[in-house]
Image (cartoon, rainbow over all chains, first blue to last red; front, side):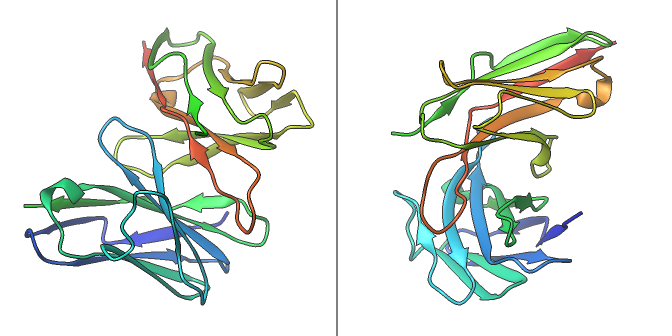
Length: 114
Length: 114
């Protein structure tokens, strides 16, 4: 089946710094990638949708200048959390969709901002 | 706004019993629904899906039922095993242009006791 990886799996950063999370589709080309955020004991909340080669579409309430998304190729999307603060600590999950539209989820990245 | 909700936040069952997890959705125009299983610290794992032109779909030990009249979705797990312990999310794909957006429900934690 389709495999999606994320790197890093865990990251700790200091408040005010930026951190980049990578999402890769390993065995298929992803025309669309999605980024979700999940707080403890809560559901997945869609942050943004990115299509290869175009600007990401952000959900209402998500700051595009704080959460920078780049989808430079059909197998890689990156999420950069800029000027991170403790309230940005969360579990970030990406998914990738091929031409069928079915989403395949990555294993998630645990971000802790100290 | 659009939302997908669950009736039960937690469900405890005995090993070997059948489990039923319920979900209510709000967008009557949604045409595709998915159940995901999420284990602690991992990304969601696809279980089963159903399109709106069906009212039942069966997989291995799992059955999804869709009642469009009352906008209700359920996941039935037969002969529940300890390995089924996880949080289960339903997700809804409302009509949208350009990409297959998913709206996740709140989740139900399934605890299987020996």
